[in-house]
Length: 501
Image (cartoon, rainbow, N blue to C red; front, side, top):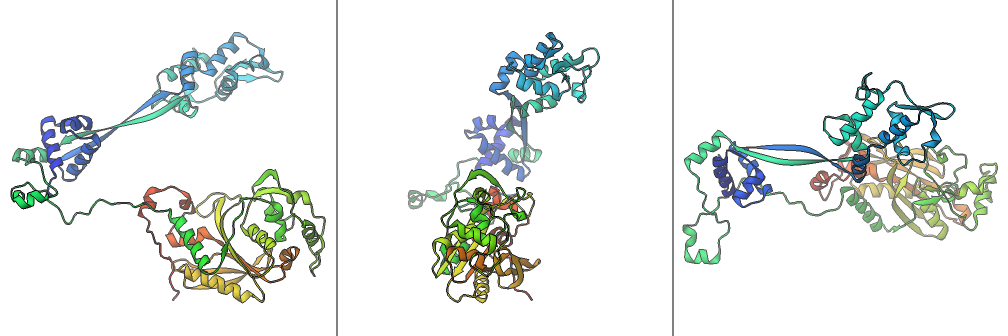
């Protein structure tokens, strides 16, 4: 059997007298805290010398609203009595009553009242809810009301009405925990053999060494095979660490970081990227629209002309009539590309190398691979004679620095770039994984802002890289405060990708 600590011995000696006791009582006997006693109990339990039982007890407390109802009665009970005293009255007669707003809703929910076509409020002849409201013919409606009042006065964990009162904010449930510790027959046998409960010395002093007192001291034994207590250092969230790593890589590649607001006008989010005003992605089911509007920037007429007939370019535009009011509507940005075009509008002269890592918002059903908000990595390079070949080189360099050795590209389509491409990386066990979109900005996007040089652009999914690097299968874990996962995550998360063989 493993060596017992002094505190375990003291606990067993106390249990030999008490047989079974609460942690609080044992703590008073041993001059310790209840938490420490429980810890010693678990150590003894691991050796088969004691047993620790966790006992929970639920209790219910009244909120301020609940105390008022306890004194005056539930709103539905108050209203029920008034309706009963005034049969066939108009509902308007009760609407000014303080108990009406809550009480009437509860009475209708439980099938106790109805409103006729002429606005008269009547008590129902039968109860249409479940067994908890079937009070019997002898009591009728008042029986269920009385039962609710009784449940309020005597809440119980087994009473469904108690659970309903908790949901209504009338009661608050609390749980108390206590620990009962008992000694096992093996523990009693060990105590009977005799325990050395002299004070142990864990650290020798200078005087003890010089005087030789250490020779007769009761030294604490150490188990060199036992692991020390885990220490969790402070560290940032794994997802944030990965974002910081991406930012550092791009800064080292000579890029400047862009910043911008989460709320953008439809002008910058859609129109400036040459997306037609009747495009499906601009519908309410795909985009979060706000009630606010933003003024159009100076020179917006050039963009109007580009949409309607292609402006001064060889493009024919989208035709039709471009609506400036539609462009003023504000949205939660659906991509960070809106920041790229604004940056180009204020920096039309080459060279430009800029990036942004920011959160974007789209109406998505939440599941393991989709959330309505996520991070996007946006980048642009504008200079004389840059080409599509340079774009592929930038993307390949970035992903290889992120730890993904095999990168390939396949043709893609995006409304504001031509040609367009979708980068893919090889991940062992998954194969080729698509990571985002990229391309060269169309002339319809850059010409209204006086940009004459080619602009390479890309928008990459940050969360997808994070899932691969961190070995996750559920995207939602990136946004949860899971302390256990954060504590056990490595400060450096190596790439989960391997070279394709």
